[in-house]
Length: 470
Image (cartoon, rainbow, N blue to C red; front, side, top):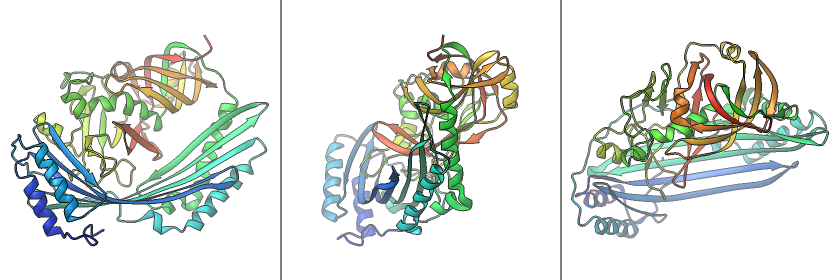
């Protein structure tokens, strides 16, 4: 763990004294210290095209009174810099007076190890694997026209100093391995993309040649799309596959259950607590406690231990996701959902691992119940209004369903709708819940944070499908 003050004219005792003095008349706040390192290595067109490494060290000083947030940040961890930030915070809140909320839960639970994935594996060994990936995929035939593969690694250490010398610490590893394949046949080009990742070392994801599974999946998706025909258009039944399609739940429903949107009454769910918002059998949770998962955190960026928060239970709205600010103003408790991209950013209530839990139906039962519809296996890009839940998602792998059987792969299918309406159209929830492979990043208010999603197969009775085949 870093000693954030070893090269400064401060020590922990002096820093804690400044924090306590600054927050004396505030409701909440903290000094957030961060030491982060990140790397990326990219292979494209048979050669290493980019390799980068960066490190950053700094602090964010926050003071809150009422709903007013004063924030100051710097990459200069020194007595002079932190005192200037302190004076700025005091000046911003000089007409306000609050009572500091010392209550914060403690836990000894950890959901990942204190390891540094960047240093655990040499640069040459990472480049060697990327070249093996390139050779392995190109050995599949002349239809392979392009291979892109990359490693992304991060190591972040944080320390949170609250008033009265309360100190909380966390070390966060994060890695991701991605492969993209372009196939070309008879003048037609299609792309397949697949990746894996989480809060472990690179070797945990690459052992037993797991990298070949990633390559095979990327190749398979591109090959399926080479054989696809134009997607149908119109209103029809849609079966969503397990795992990554839960990104639709994350975007179209999850954001609407974050505390800030509901406190400000800009979410479609703000006045529906305790009411039915989804079909019976639909239970959605946001869980930050899954071991080694990309969206998991031992503590959030305010120091609160994460938890498994039940958002919707059997169709009834039960909870919102809360940071400390919004929880206090809504007279409830933090759910350990306060997150920030870095020390340069303010805390917001954010999702962690958002999941729909399993039901009782098999995927085969769902498919057999559909006369005409589509089976959506994976999504790519999309557009979402995160407060209303209105969305358009592009399917990257999908199939037609005719008379209860999966048919040809289709290309160009888009799913159009809004989250609150779709929740009420779920008629069957599968027994095959699956986590995504560990690739998600969520954007909100200009900040990106790693997240996870999961769901079983689900049948949506009525949904608008955008396609080119009427």
